[in-house]
Image 1 (cartoon, rainbow, N blue to C red):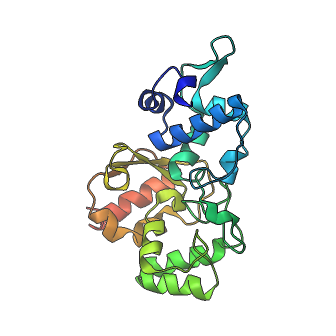
Image 2 (image 1 turned 30 degrees about the vertical axis):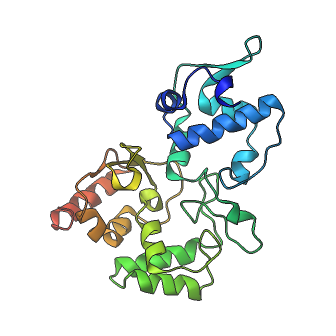
Length: 246
């Protein structure tokens, strides 16, 4: 049903609007449900935030217009709004059903932010402290133990461990940046291009670089395209000059 309402395939559509295939598929499905009168709700593929989006916003994101006579969606030239693409690429628009469990924290892929890109003040202080611990050389396990002692849940409402914290901390979203996966098939293991985001940073770029030095040194395909400020640019240059960024 979904495919029959759109005149272009998912791969072409995703490339045109600047979203990945999964994101495009989910939003196309939501648009189709709106148009056919099917019930819409949160499930394992659709967050409450996405399910509550008005049809007009979904169509704007997908860059399509409804042809009432043909009963199909026609493409409109252009890309999805930059801010929306940044949030989607960083995972903020994709929350798991865990957010609906009693006592579970909002399950952003980038945990610690609200859907509008603002910091979740309930946990931001503890998360920032945990980042500082790693940047000081204390390790991921110490940071995870600190968050558990501070009663900060994971995105799914469970407990932190070193692997969960490491994966969360490697996202440049923490420092106010977004990562674009230039190879959608490889995602995290493929090349990254990092640009400034429009959301509030949790830590300074210098802190993020320090807590991810080992990871960044192991990857030669991660590069900054732009910086939020001259201070960030200078800090990145200084970090590279130490030899840690080589």
